[in-house]
Length: 312
Image 1 (cartoon, rainbow, N blue to C red):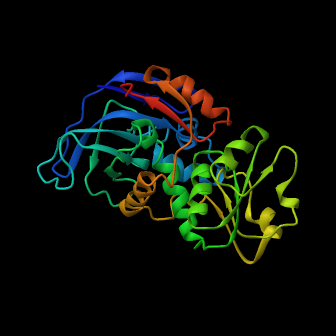
Image 2 (image 1 turned 30 degrees about the vertical axis):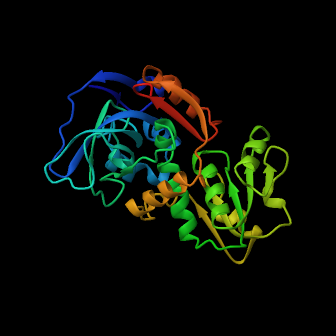
């Protein structure tokens, strides 16, 4: 099968499409024929190894010293089950699924084996794809949505609370806006001029243009500030918080907030009821993985960037 291999840490050009052995499912695994996958900011950071200096050593030990231990890139996918292990009970051959394989990686390939009952984002989380969305939309509705949901749950978001989402136009941010509105909060989204209309269209009650004003100087006070892009800090946002207000940065909490299959099924339910919709910026063919990473590296993507594996 074909897979996207990260040969070493560096710019997008370190990625290569190579022929590798097609995986075989273990007793508790399903073999997925991948139809769509994504390139996320997380993929970009891992490929280029742009991590804060205090995370450098543990990240190298975990991910790989000179190159990634898990060479096949990608954390999100959708597709069809081609084969199942002897102990699999939840799925059948032919089922259409979507999955967050997370730090198990391997989604940027023609095939991927996933544990039927993954307990965490190393095992992979998998469930049936909503029938009312495309494979591209399904692939885009895992990592960003799950991260946003986990952070909002950690903040114990409630009806009527005032919430500010910094980085409201990215993958995590667009899901966070919609989920906060689902929980009946009053949402202010912070983004650039080009994305104001988008953020309004997905439900934000108010929008702030960070290119024209410093949101940290607003007179408004918030119950929850969510940094979806890891570009601000609690100390700089503290003056905006109510006395019992909460600040959470998505990327500081990705490894500390539990995410499970129940969360993915909750996202599925919202998608099926049209209460949540992924924002898709660009779709690239498999062969343009380098161009897709270059685009994500530029830092201006809206929502999600999709890689079509077989074009469905």
